[in-house]
Amino acid sequence: MKLIFVLILMASMVRAGTLTETRTTLGSVHKITLTWSTPTNAAAGVSGTMDLIAGTFDRVVFPLTSASTGAIYSVTIKAAGVDLLNSLATTLPTNAITQFAPVANAITAQSVTSAIPWKVSDQCSVVVTNCGSNALGTVILYVTP
Image 1: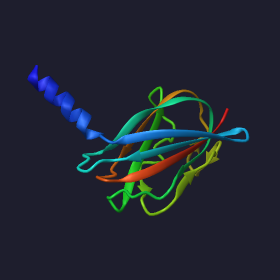
Image 2: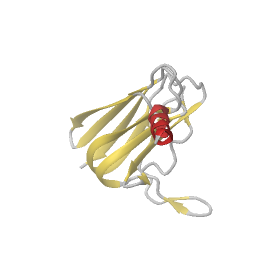
Image 3: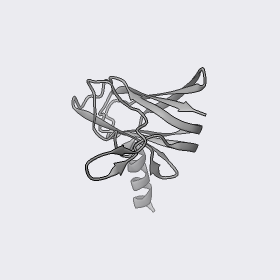
């Protein structure tokens, strides 16, 4: 029994920090701003669950962060277990603004890919990793109902 408690405690310490969500409406587009922070001695990052999202992801923006790794950090946004960013946000630079926009049927030499748009009607889970201690960051989602 003690071993189970210790494992649960260790798992909860892995992603300590805060994740806040702010929503505004810009015409027919909903802007969802996720602000995250990690405390001192954070082991891995931040995780949380967003309020219900109903609509199509139009654009996702990752502004500059204060992530202490100096190189890259990762963000995963999932609905019903599916990565809505198709692993595109696994190597985000901390010193540059990154954004993804809809690319319906983008054709490469070998295959047809479609990263975004996703129609969602779910509470999404958000996980930020590789950001280190005392880091601050933002993810901005633009969603059309």
